[in-house]
Length: 108
Image (spheres, rainbow, N blue to C red):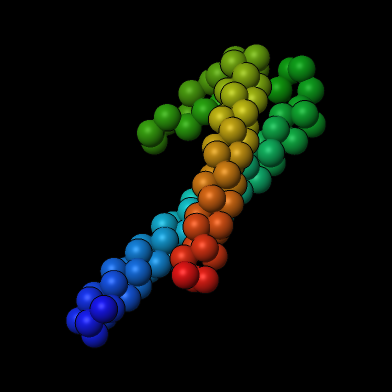
């Protein structure tokens, strides 16, 4: 092989590795954001658990606080937590896949 062919091949491999690293960074950032959202929603759930039956729950809609049914508020938080946890599992799988691909590229 000529030096130019080898150099072109190395550049292509380098670009592929850099793309994998960029994708890995994005996935890590996404995972951190999801973790933050999960913590926030778990705090809301804990606050709801401490409320007594006569407490009112309000939801911020734009600049206005709107009264919300207790069961609806609980269901919304539960659904949000379920969605966030499912998304975390998806991102974890993506992170694992990207890490494996990155390690494989590094050894090539």
